[in-house]
Amino acid sequence: MSKVFKLVINCDNAAFEDDPVAEIKEILKKAMQTLEREPDNPCYRTMFDSNGNDVGRFRLKDER
Image (cartoon, rainbow, N blue to C red; front, top):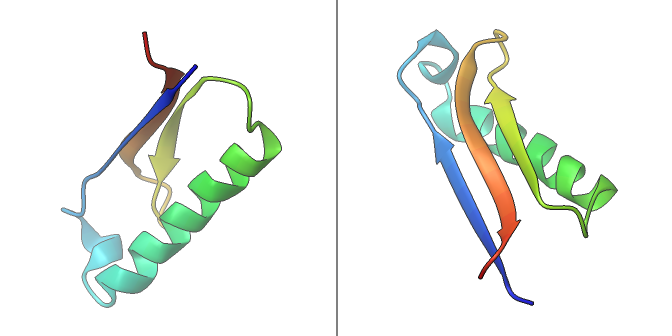
């Protein structure tokens, strides 16, 4: 069965002002760690920036 991965990150807050690339890299690193822990499980997760703000979601699910 094939899978679909979707990710949205809202970069519209203070955590992204000084170094947006570093902030995005850290968020993606945390998403990757989640996927590595649960590689075969469909998942839907909220992502947080370094200030603890909800900045987006990622989802891995089976494609029908």
